Length: 238
Image (tube, rainbow, N blue to C red; front, side, top):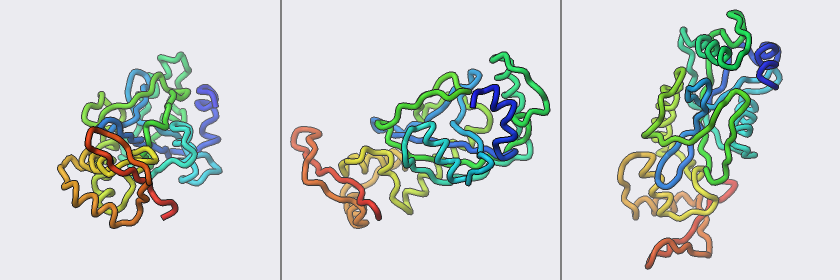
């Protein structure tokens, strides 16, 4: 839908007072990154609304596919954000004024919204994100060097950052951040980056291989003189 049609008819197409916000996370050159959108000169998380005839998971999949172009994007439920004063009508009013759109206090977008937040781990090498119809720009930002974040999205990002630390201790999902084929040193460095702590490389590799979730490939990757680590890929399905 075009912006004008969403504004005018959105209440007929989307579930009222409910939204989806996505913390899309990438990894590049030893740094965790977060995908942000610029709307009315404010950086926010990608997101959207749930269609009347959609399940929540279908909606998340659709919005992620629109943002990442991935057919089967990874996503995991994060939390519900529903503060009693969670209303961003002033931010929408500013956006409407800048775009020359008519603003009405009774617009569906001016109401209080509860959001279902998810995080998604993606291989940045496979993504070429583009701005949506509401967005002025899209970009990747280091988690440790984020710009000023609008709405309440900084708290959602912080929640996601901490959740990943907990989740990777219980399940193996970090491979979603790497290319399909990777080395154990790459996986080791990724875990150190996420946890912000040093991990014994030998113990880490033994632990990973003991899960029997990784298939060693016959070819070697030449990373540096004297170092020829095996490449691995995740066995599918588990």
